[in-house]
Length: 81
Image 1 (cartoon, one colour):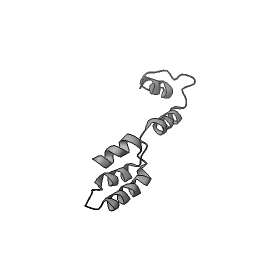
Image 2 (cartoon, helix red, strand yellow):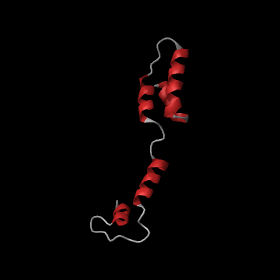
Image 3 (cartoon, one colour):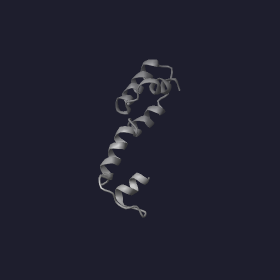
Image 4 (cartoon, helix red, strand yellow):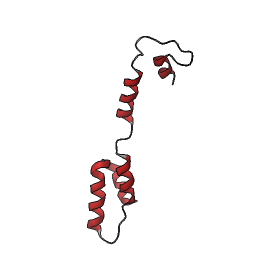
C-alpha cells in the first residue's frame, strides 16, 4: 500500500520520481501473479459430475478445461473431487 501511495502521491505521501507508472505496475502484477484460469469456465468445470459414463465425464471436464487451463496438482484434485 505504501508503494502504491508513493506512486500516486495519495494519503499525505510525496509523489516520488520513478513511481509514476502505478497503473502499469498494477496490471503487470495481476497478470503475473493473478489467477491463471478463466473463472467462468472453472465454475462450469466444477459442476461436471460423474454419471456412470467415464467417457462423457472426461469429455465434459476436458472441454471446460480448454478455457480454464488448470494443470498439475490442481487439475488432479478437481478430477478427484
